[in-house]
Length: 166
Image 1 (tube, rainbow, N blue to C red):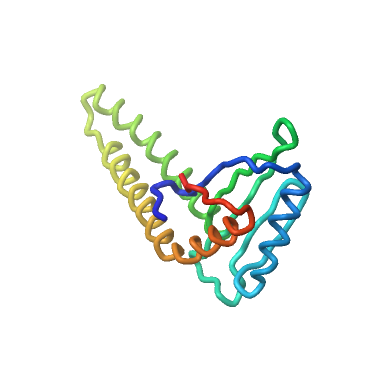
Image 2: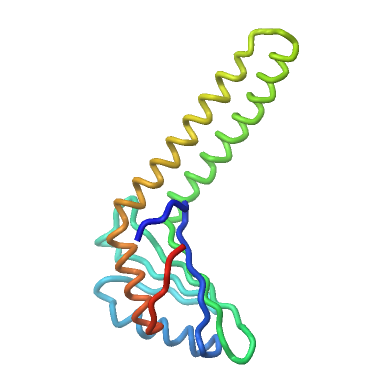
């Protein structure tokens, strides 16, 4: 189970209405209370690793349930870290991206005006930092891979089918 996405995901359709599908997932996942916890809201289910087993890179499985035609339910699942970790990476990417874009524009203007293009050095540094953040996120996914696999197995048992992560 390896994915180069920052937040691996899957999508499939269950042959049940949304309430039945949600209840099936929640009931089945609660049978694994020794390995994960379940949080359920209308149209949304979240599977978490138990707090005693979590670490910085522990994943969560967020399931969004949407009604489809003829009493079926589309389930969109997304694996991701704790909200604090995800927010740190999100804001980090935004900050590095903004600084990179503006320094790249500054460097291009400096080149255009035949000035020393020190802005391009900053843009290159931001690109290296962005690549480093991506590699760090991939490293974190690898550390949490066993727990991701556990959550995926619990979900597959709940729906009774094999689902490919994209």
